[in-house]
Image (cartoon, rainbow, N blue to C red; front, side, top):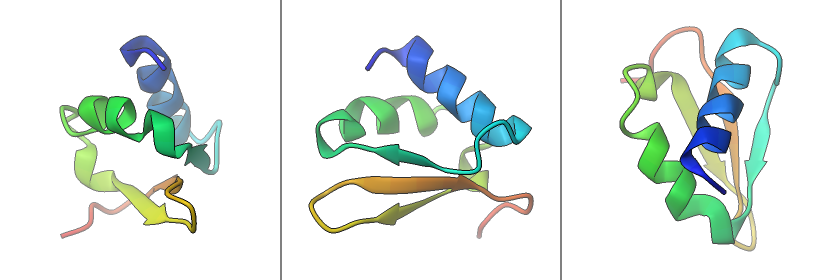
Length: 64
């Protein structure tokens, strides 16, 4: 997964085009590298799933 693909997915979550996105275990590090550099990083919530996948949602209010 490239940084450009990750940015498009995150923009889709922010804009409401996607309600959630499942990141596979093997893509997690590439995904995280992009998400932590964003200004709206605290608006994304990742919920760990069994097997190492992470389900991401966008929150209107930033988490603390």
